[in-house]
Image 1 (cartoon, helix red, strand yellow):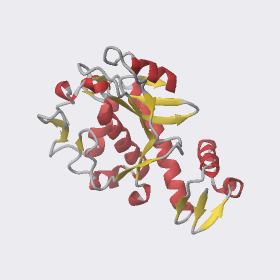
Image 2 (cartoon, helix red, strand yellow):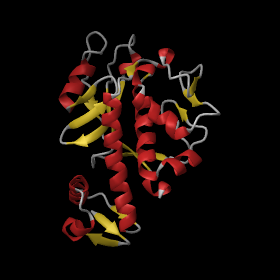
Image 3 (tube, one colour):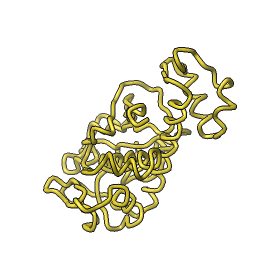
Image 4 (cartoon, helix red, strand yellow):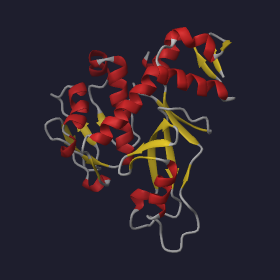
Length: 242
């Protein structure tokens, strides 16, 4: 259900205000859920729809960039823009422009390696850049830090339990019987594209059964529980960036 300024709105009433076909699809899916999607105004809704499209665009670009998958222990960035910290995180250099540095990951992907949670952070920062522009991005993220789920205060992220999945959401596959020798495969964080299509760093863009089969090959001997898609959704606080 969609509410704009406390009024329930149907997708057909928004058609003339939302010409983008991808955005129309997202709006139709929103309307089918019991979950209430509340917006201050049409601009607020359009900003979220644009951000969701930019998230999928960034995920596709990261998948195509040539970046490598590795654990925190062996992670590395392009030293021209980032300092690698002892925990495997990447901290923006003082003389580096944030927008240039984050886009360098797409431009020079072969100079980077990291695990899937950092990949999600990178996707969301790139989507933020596409959504708010270079100047504002550079002003907000002067000390950009890429590490697991540690986001800047200016990009607030929240998680909730539910199955109202929408394109542009970050979802999570759990692998409870993971191989202790490969703990990095205890889960796979993904960007949802809709139509059973997901991007996960180290896995690529695949459907759910392919990702589950991949994770099931990374389990301990005599496993009892299959990997599965969790009923948990991670989303930016879109309104904070308006």
